[in-house]
Image 1 (cartoon, helix red, strand yellow):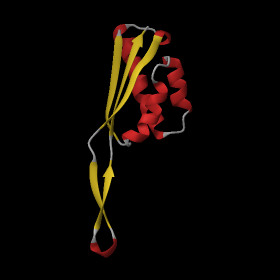
Image 2 (image 1 turned 90 degrees about the vertical axis):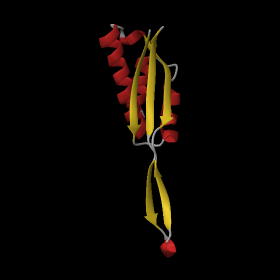
Image 3 (image 1 turned 90 degrees about the horizontal axis):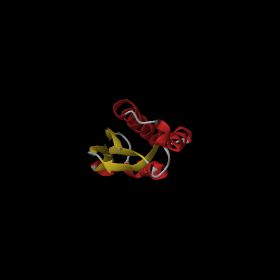
Image 4 (image 1 turned 120 degrees about the vertical axis):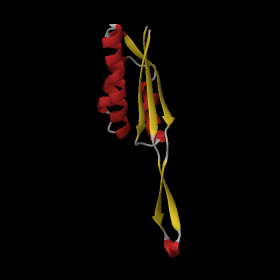
Length: 110
């Protein structure tokens, strides 16, 4: 049985969030929660919300035990980019790209 959870339009660059998602893949849910809780990164806190949502989906919708779940995949995709401009020297403008991410976590009970 596969259970998934998604979080969309998270205000963090996907490159930064992928560092945390690589740590979670293939781990048991209890290990993944420990990694997310102890990591000092902003992406870990945001990924933890998605992981807890997937665990809640598994427990409430499919009556699965938390201890038997493992993280099959933790994917970070690109979301829409907010485009902003900042004034630069001699009347020009510098482009600022505020990137967003989509998180997807799939749990399986092996």
